[in-house]
Length: 283
Image (cartoon, rainbow, N blue to C red; front, side):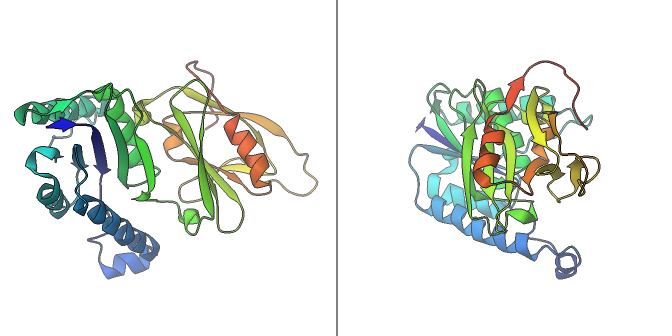
C-alpha cells in the first residue's frame, strides 16, 4: 500500500470522561460540546474511507482507533503505545515515536515518500498538543510538506474563540511559522503563531513584534494578561514597544487586539520576524 496522506489525530476526547460535577465546577460545557461536534467530524471523515491515507492516533479512546481500522484497514492505522521517558525528555520521546512509526511502516510493507506525502492535523488542543506534536512529527519524520492545521477538526482551549466570526492564516516570511488570526465574536482580534515543520515545544527561535501597549496585549489561553505588565490608563503615554518570545512560548501566548481595527491588527501580526538569535525575551 502506498501512503500519500497522513492524518495526525492528537490526544482526542480529553473532556469525554469528565463527571458532571467537574464540568459544572470548572464551567467546561462549552468545550464538552465542541469536542462532541468535532468527534462526529472525525468519525464522518473516517467513514468516507479516504484512500492511500495513514491514520496516526496519539492517545485517546481505542474506539476511535477501531473505527479507523474498520474503515481504512489495520495496516493504515498506527496507534503508538510508545512509553514516555521517565526524565521527561521530549526529544527522546519524539525519537521513540518516530522509531515506532517506522517499525509500523516496515511491518506492513507500506510505501511512504516523505518528500511527497501530505498531512493534516486533528485533535486537542488547537493551541497546545496539536501544533506541538504536529510540528514534532513533521520534523522527526522529515516531511517536506508542512501538515495542514484543520481548525474545524480541533478542540480549542481559549474560551474567547467561541463564536469567532472568521479566521485566516498568514505565512511568516522565510520560515515554517504560520500566524492564525481570528476575529472574535465581539470584534476584537486574537492571533497565535505556530510552527509547522519544527518541534515547537523545544523551538528556541525568537519571534519579534512591535506592540502598542494601549491597543494590544499578550495573554494566555485562559485570558490572563502577560504583557503589558500594567494596564493602560487614561493619561498614560501610549507606547509601541518591541516584544519577543520563543516559538516554544508561542504555544500558549495569544496576541489580542483590544482597541484596534482588524485590518490594522493583521498588518502587525504579519510583520513579525523569526530569528535564530538569543535576544532577551519579554517574560
